[in-house]
Length: 219
Image (tube, rainbow, N blue to C red; front, side):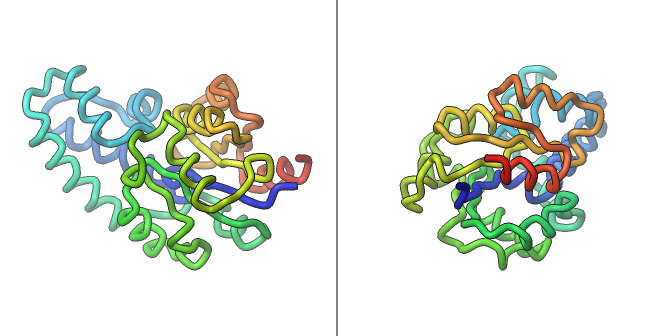
């Protein structure tokens, strides 16, 4: 029986991955560099921001990574604060499920809390159940954040599922020895194959949170 659900944050609870790709695309276009939003989603979604900066700097020969990071952070935070919304169906899902709810994310804890408050989801999560990359030594795809959640919360792996939207997140959950349900309800999954999550080790993939309920009920 499933008693605990650990949610990834970006792309699962909040539809922020589409905001990240907007920020990078808008920023680079101003520098006469063409990075489409779909290109960003395919190749960089789910990675820690600092890692994305490194990868894009190498790809487009951007010399000053510190300035790149600072300016993209300013733009991304502006868009995050002004345009953030929930992933479709997640609020209803949170209201329906009778499970212990946790978060395991590659985002910083302060930013997670700000996002939850912005979209009115904070009442579903205790502060002590929010686990972020700044609480562990290695971010996803390493399993540290999920192992930390299991250890601190004293919950059992076989009574827990993870809901993830990215390949690196699925890999982290599998490495933590927890069943992972992939979700493709976020806007950044438009036009992409859910098989990417299955190939990364997801137990099942759902297009909507209603499908997640169906999958959970069969476990």
